[in-house]
Amino acid sequence: MTLPKEIIDYLKKFNQNDNSIYGFFGGNLALINYGVNNNNEILLKIGLKRIKESISSLSIARNKHQSYSNGFISSGIIADYLVRKDLIDTDNDFFNLIDKIAFTYGQNYLKAKNFDFISGSTGIGFYFEKRIKENKLATLFIENWISDVNKNVKNDNISIYDIYLSKKESKIINCGLAHGLPAILKLSIKLLYHLPNDERLKNIIDSIVKFLLSIKCNSNSLYYFPHTINPEHINTKADLFSRLAWCYGDLSLCYILLQTAKVIDDDYLYKYSIEIIKKITSRRTQNETGIVDAGLCHGSSGVAHIFNRIHKLTGITLLKESVEFWLKKTLEFSVNGQGTVGYRIPNISNKKHEIGLLNGIAGISLCLQTYLYSNFDWDFSLILD
Image 1 (cartoon, rainbow, N blue to C red):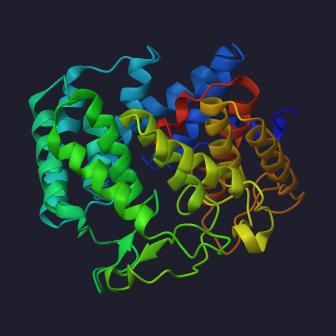
Image 2 (image 1 turned 30 degrees about the vertical axis):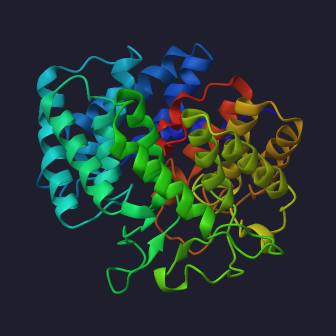
Image 3 (image 1 turned 180 degrees about the horizontal axis):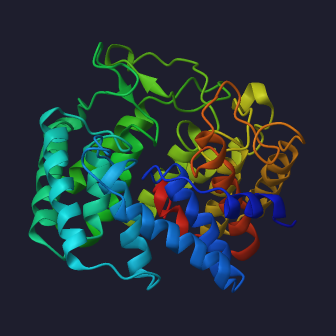
């Protein structure tokens, strides 16, 4: 397999700033990654130059929404990654500003009981997790986040409600990685590395794992975990469709359970997760998976990449076959004359969705590059690291 040259050529020519890790801004990681993997100084410099220009253009007036996916915080997350890889230099004043903005917005999200990853306090937590040993604001916010989450998972009774789908109209628990419990679980196991004796973190991890295992669909169902669940129906063993994707569904949820099992040394959870993941490999049709495009978020490249991650972690041959199947499907989704470089997102008119990291060709490129060069570094953006 080779990386379609048209994708890199298009990304090289197209330049627009939106200060979003999942949009054009984050899409520059595709050029940077390609430049590093191929010793291509020209593409590396183009990608880094755009990142620096985007950071320089930040303003509170223009970037009113601050979260993991937008504005100063989103820019700070990518800048932090590039600084740690010695690809750019940024002074302390820049990160001090980001820290203050992140803390202010993070505290507001906590007050609103917004534990969303992409647009809430959990996303802020992922930013501060990398800086927990570097400043007091990071330490303070992480303490507040742990305390607030722990209050909502006492005695295995989960009361962390969705603010993304339900818009606070009803008490729905979100079970997707993009907006729900798996992201909270992932941040908790990352924080456990820094705070190995924190009993609240252990309670959060234990409670979320038990909850997720308790809502498994009917034993004869093709699917395992619902996207969302109403607390009133927790004891009802439903047979609900669960897509194959990064944002929601069995695959990304089981990957986080697998990572959790390794961190807490839970042999049962590890084997249970592997068993489900193996069964998931048989789901390949549109009706079984919900896949209609090639994007990372809910398309074939995201599925290929997660299978690739799990294969790297486990070495299971069956998973390598699934990686190759979904990569082939990703290439087949390219249709000449339609969309951007042949790739289009159904029912989406905004061009950034066809170009950016989460749904567009930049993300598709990163998935293909990872398969070719085994460089997984960039997927911190999807909290798959």
